[in-house]
Length: 401
Image 1 (cartoon, rainbow, N blue to C red):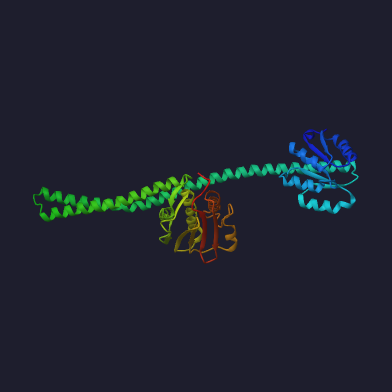
Image 2 (cartoon, rainbow, N blue to C red; image 1 turned 60 degrees about the vertical axis):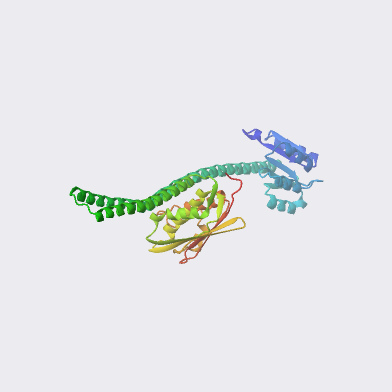
């Protein structure tokens, strides 16, 4: 007996005892574990207690036919067991139908010769082995792809955070510059006043002028620093959200505004943004992943949509109805061909392979919307008509923390 064949389990199901005995004598010369069942009912009971690699089943049996037996086994969820059907000459059509319907390995006409039987069994087991090996490979590759996807998502999060930091630095630069300018002007006025004081000739007008500059500088600095504090506080929350997947309650307009305002440094000088999102749309969901989705859409517009354009516009509208919020992101860019629209969410699909595109962002976007946010995303576009992305997600994501 060949190595490994002792592990093979075969069940012969036939209502004729002579046929069962003959098949067992032939098979036991090569396979150690060969059992029998006199009808389909007995076979089903045996299958509840143990599994078999191969069933050799008579098609025409009383009570439970071979056809009914095979269908019931498949219905019970067993897709691994292989089947060889034994038929009489008058049942070929039924055997052919079963071959197509439930994917049996082979069918043999009675009486069955030894060589034909062993060849059929060997082929069926070989097919089963290859199928199992393929399933294992698919499982391994799927696990590897999921691990790679997780790494890509993490990398994309870090890249998004980097863009966020750059955008915030750009935004904070204006209020900080206002404060520095005010302090410089106050310093000049202070030097002038000090010189007048040292020369013994300070006038009332000079004192009033200095006090006015001090007052104005304080007010302008407080306003500017308050704006800087607002931006930094907003940045802190965005940074926490974009580097985590914490579920919390948040206003949708704050996420949309935060993403678009944090990307100023990456926009062209003449890109306009318009947000139309009611302030009362509040979600109990994942603001970080949602922000990453919007971030990826903006990056897609900048890389692809505005190619060759000197100006453009990006708009985001949102409305809530029946527990679902619909977010429509759109640009007036160059648009896409139908084939690109069809494949835009495919992993690694990009039309800019050598120009900064890696085909990852939109695939990650699709996965986040469907798997994390429990929603859907669609793309609509035509050449020359810009692109629109319609996202629909529940206001409350249930069953996730």
